[in-house]
Image (tube, rainbow, N blue to C red; front, side):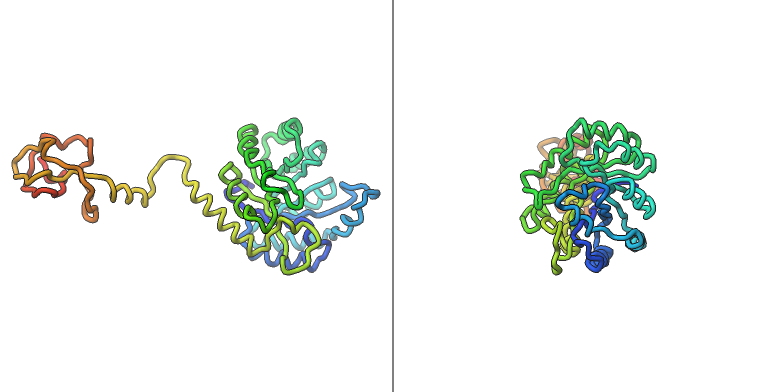
Length: 330
């Protein structure tokens, strides 16, 4: 799998609160949306949090059975959308392999879990690396381990929501140049701020090829991960914004589009007779003016500084202001 530009990943996270009905309803809408991929967090609490932690029971309630994940991932794949898992340990990696996901994501908290990352690399799964909170030496080490594999470094972190001034969009350019790999942006700005749709578009300008956006059902009570989330309809609006931004970037080379060539024709000055000219006269500089002309039926005029005009002989009479065409000269 390649991380296409501009791709939009719908991040389900834990907005479902462990409610299967909520999850199914959200997924049903996402499958009709313009999201390119759907990413899930299949929680297995014992993989990453101590049973003595104050939030252990909360995470335990977010768990679903393997059979449900297999079913839901199958539904995503039927639509042609890509599907991904966050992987926190060997059990969730095994689940990802069982469900045949298209790529997996590793949180920065697991950058020191080199054994897990090595197994992902060995499995040849495309890998997204969440760099929020990671140091450069930690990223260096993981990138060396993943050398030769498809990797996308993701910029951003969740602070429920994260202030726009913490977006760190310049990191996208830095990481892309340092590691010569794909980069993406995880948007966590407040859902109702003016930057909720702007920051992802700005991220494209900084080199991001993919955008991850949290999703939820805004018409239903949502316990978790709603602060920076869009509902599926809002997600479609964001996708349209991203496509327009990508189109506005244009091509990397310098070439004129058909529309720009028409603009050039319309406004560029061309050679016209500076006075009434007779057939047989040789053209001198004083006989010529350069003016804007109507190009509707003109394909071969002379432009300023173009050779092959001065000293040529007219085949026919030309009144003052008439266009001087190449076929009218000897």
